[in-house]
Length: 112
Length: 114
Image (cartoon, rainbow over all chains, first blue to last red; front, side):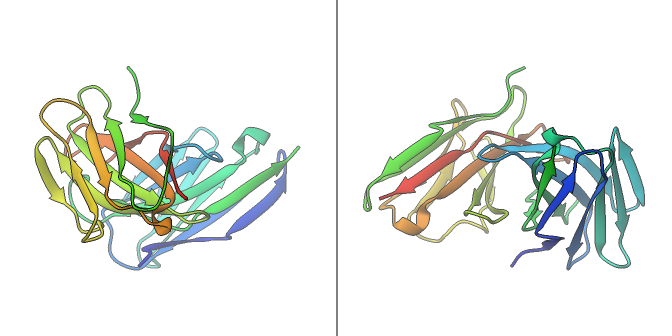
């Protein structure tokens, strides 16, 4: 069964606005990662947050993690047309990089 | 440093044929993972391999699917007697070692079974 569920499933916003996507998971985790997938392409790693971290920044990306609620959010500030893609959260449960469990994804569309 | 390479990018097979998907990890990476993505869905883990070893194949269907990562050459995901339900995108990822949490993904192979 899917470990992660992203919310919303689809999101359309105007260029320049901020986009927020959420991810919930069911079991305890070691790390949570966010990936981007452009249509018909492979996945690009965006950011990793460890279970003992609460917030992390990378450029226009801000990720939060609430292990008590088993949820994470990805905020993209000042969105650009090039941010149009699907975004997935992925969790791993063990120490060491073993299998990732992916959510169902949020399809983000930035309207120019 | 070339990224993860997968070939072919697109593969069309008739029902009952065999599909062989190849993955060359990033240089210096000895850990390979295979994932399957059905349309409009997230990726599902299939198998995790190191050179000459299958570490975790809990996501692999019990029949018709096999994977290997030989000492020399790419990792191979093999699907025998393909059925329409096998149509999907198959992604390979690699990591440098067990303690590296980041997996680098290839562009995927899109398998279509007619």
